[in-house]
Image (tube, rainbow, N blue to C red; front, side):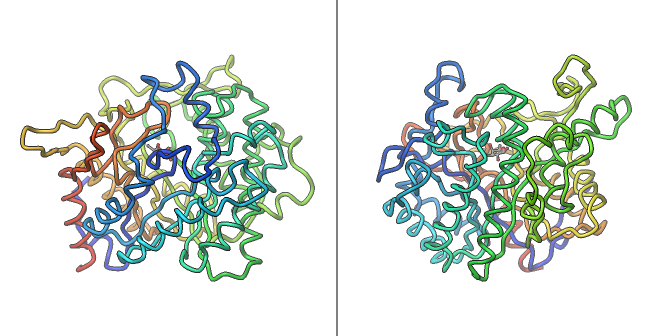
Length: 445
Ligand code: FCB
């Protein structure tokens, strides 16, 4: 794959970075914030590598001005962040915590003052713990509390925020959180997973419908993660198809087609009520796709859904997460999305990036060439999909800063900016400088 050139994207393509509240904010007990399922999960021994927690993270809650200054220096057009639901409603519902809203007012104002457009994601996995105690996403009522929360945030911030994202990667919060038990709330049940899938879809649909009736002039969309199994020799295509039907398509099919994939339908039917698909199938203004690596799967008749994820072969290149580096699968995934839906809204690559072991040199520099190369190759993959007719209008690097990488704690570093967690000092890496120049050249092209 050739190197990407700025002209591949054109001057109106949007460039950004993405972050998430729990991964960067810290300040978990400040200004009335209630506990989230991630605070509770982090306290359970053995759940997070090295016993790390998001209690302090990047201390972005106090350092957001410095972080936005970095974004400005980077030259990005757009910034996607998430709101912590338990800052707004400490117990998930009821009385709004205005000190929580105030933080996001300051954040949004500062972002705009620096010429960057904020994209606000309502849910990046940090459900208020009080709602988990009522069943969380396995309880259909959570969809109503989510809708109330969404409306409250839009009422307070919708005069300045033009783009709202309903959910980040509902596959990860349902499957890793409710079936594999690797993420909060740490459940391991097929039924919990299936009910969470449907309730997350329903929440997004109800939230979208409610926002539309508010009459704001907003661009509304949602974000899924995808990484279809590579169509290469030796791949188990049947198992891969089943995997994708159970894990990837159940979020886009209901939204864009108004039904679940055939193999999911019978599994999930008991959670679906009359009228649900009318709410879920919604003409969104954009769709975000997060891509990191292709899934590899094999058939396994003993497994709950008939397949099992397997690690990539030793010889393939990988990131520090052990994730396979295969940009061609990114293009294939984007093409598959286009081919599956007759009417597809514009796409944005809402997350893409990589963790590598970074070395801080004696002069303080971080020459993370592998990260730059990963981004370059994946931008080429995006350019290829665009040339093949996929309407992709922007790209957000994951992530601006090194941050709390969920079950892996602070070990993996995904940032364009290095964070020294002992001092909270930020240092732009070489990849930051590369992205800065590429973005500048693209805008001038
Ligand atoms: C995605 C998540 C994001 C981050 C990256 C590495 O699945 O949305 O929060 O953890 O992976």
